[in-house]
Image (cartoon, rainbow, N blue to C red; front, side, top):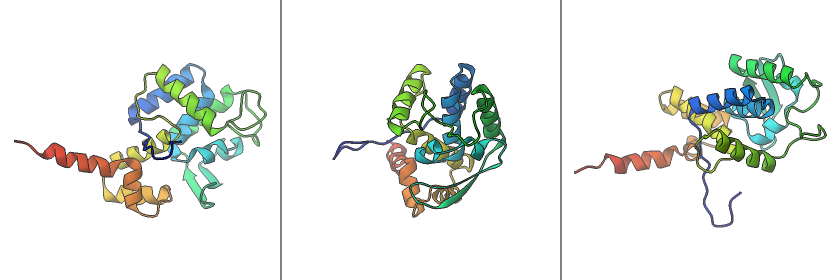
Length: 195
C-alpha cells in the first residue's frame, strides 16, 4: 500500500515470462505459488478471492463460481485446459488435500495465507527467477491477465469493454487507467513527434 501522497503503479508481466515462471515453480516443487500465480493469471481474480478458494471449487471443475469479496457480485469464471492441468498436478503434488479445505493455507495448515505475506513472497520469487515488473504485488497477476486479453484482441476497444465487465469496473476509462493504457497512449503521442 502506498503512503499518503505517494503514487505507485503496479506493473504487469509479459505473458510468456509469466507462463515460464509458472512452469519453473512447478518444476522446483513450489506448487502452492505456481498455482497461486497461475490462478491469478488465468482468471483475473482479485487476490482476496483467489486466497478464499477451496479445492472443491477447482478440482475437476470447468467453472469457478464465487461471490466476489469486494463487490459481493456472483461470478462464473471458465477454467481453461491449461489451468485445469495446473490444478490437477498441484492437487496431486500437495498430497490430495481435503476438497473442503482452502487451497492457499499457511505452512502449518491452520489458516489462509494473507495478502501481505503473498506480496513479500512474490517479490522474492520475481527476484529469484529474474522476472522484471514495476512495483511487483498481487495486483501484478490481475494486470497481466488484463494486458494479455487486450493483446490477444489486437488492442481493441471491444476487449476493453469485456475487461471492464470482468473486472467490474464502472467504465472502460477506469479499465484503461487500471491497465496503464491511457498513459501508454499519451506517451506514444510524444514518441510520434520527430524532426
